[in-house]
Image 1 (cartoon, helix red, strand yellow):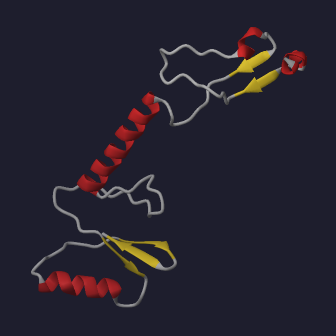
Image 2 (image 1 turned 180 degrees about the vertical axis):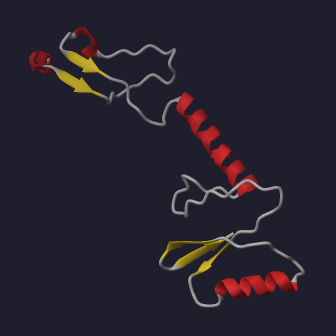
Length: 131
């Protein structure tokens, strides 16, 4: 094969046409026979182990949001880390227009809901997130 003659300078690769599905599956490549070729693992989310870790991470983030309102490491959403508390929280996301937060607060009062405090976080010029 022609590529065998061109390996003399060396090569490094992280992509392979066929990669092992798990850590226990063997890795085979015709490039393994060359001493001057460095083959490193592909770092990605395609392995079974990575998929399991991604599932655990997403579930953990949903639990943190549900239990405490934490949105740290969220994509396309403001990052908010709130102090632990024993009560309940309501999150209201709306356009950053005059009177929006006040309207939400009035609706809560009409519904007979009392709140101790509100934390306002500007996360974009056109949006506001209030807790």
